[in-house]
Length: 103
Image (cartoon, rainbow, N blue to C red; front, side):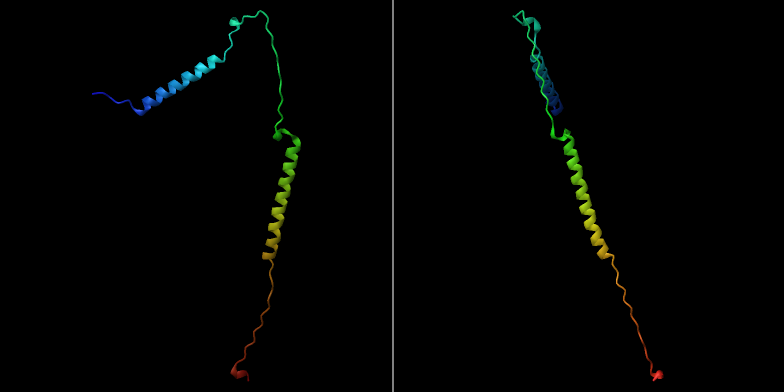
């Protein structure tokens, strides 16, 4: 009786195939210095700098100022509504009662 390959066997084969292809691509990136036909070697160096927007100090200052203004606006808005809600009015109620025997 033949056994049918399981799913894990298929996954292992696919993983092995992918890793083999990646290794082949990595070896293709190597430069062979012995295969160079010219006797003179020229090396050029280029440096590029990239300044990301979040590495600039003024961005952090502006962001902090906006955050503080937002917090102040939110806290001040909620404190004024709480002050109105916590206001109490005093009401004085006087009752007078009379009975038949007082008359």
